[in-house]
Length: 160
Image (cartoon, rainbow, N blue to C red):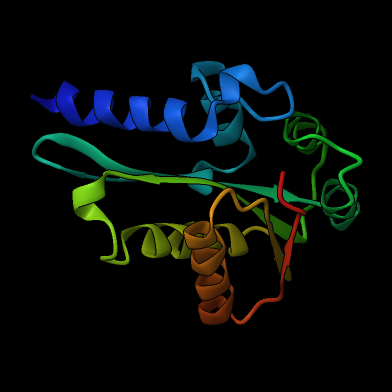
């Protein structure tokens, strides 16, 4: 039964983000997850119950210059990730993705996962701002709530 939630989240990711069909997006696979973990173990958050994962979040620490290029659409999400792998110091956090199964929505799970990741990353890096590429109005609202609770400015990449 644990595979049930996992399979549902994978389908949701494919339907919502279509990363496999968009060369500009980061297609999260096992290699990418290992690289994210190497950047900082708190880059990925997960909420699970007895049936497996019900929500996932990914955040990526970045430099201000990488954030600015990304927000100006001069870097793709993949390029942002590749540049992050070469950096050693970070001052911004890219709110990369959030997935939650429908029956777990509107409970603050993703907000809490992202804020927890932010707090852990702030123990290592002096994160001073956030950025986001919102794919929905709900995603943009969530990012604004996270920024408000974290008391950090947030900047949005123009919509697709």
